[in-house]
Length: 208
Image (cartoon, rainbow, N blue to C red; front, side):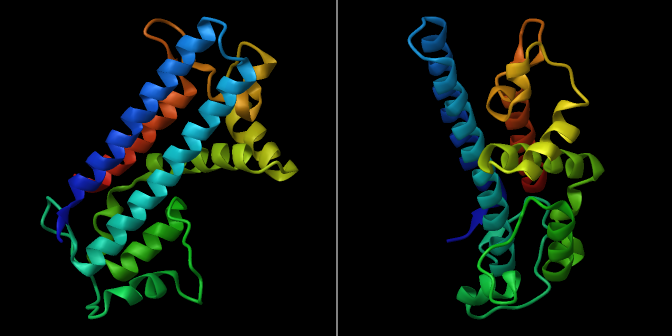
């Protein structure tokens, strides 16, 4: 069944909206002293990782769909560079080398992949230098949360924590970081919310 790329964006946005409802309920419980700080920090981390994985999946679904002709684009300019009769081999062609996974959120790799398989790299060519920087920060935050390694923590401190200002040492830790305020004046915005908006914008940019 052929679908529009905007359908992929809508599904992803809906999932983010449901996650936001969960976050707000958790904050209400925390303010009522019915949830511990450590618990709400872990919930934030889980929601972030879920959104990050969802972004990867959206990129992959779009990429494979464009190649197979199963996903259309509103611009009418997106088409594959190759013709594939057996759609089941598309992942093998794209991943290459017997791999079963691609890092879709690595800007340079995805751009090269798009130029190889899609005419003029469209629509992934719409991602620019600012998007590249955003993807890099998202990846660093993700790695700091998911991997308890010295390397991931050092990169997190250097590229995410050092350039910013935080109100307490707790906020400079991977788990505390997401609840820290990016905008401190009403209406306030946590860094988690900032990153979620970034991820939603990336999908919408490719799909529209």
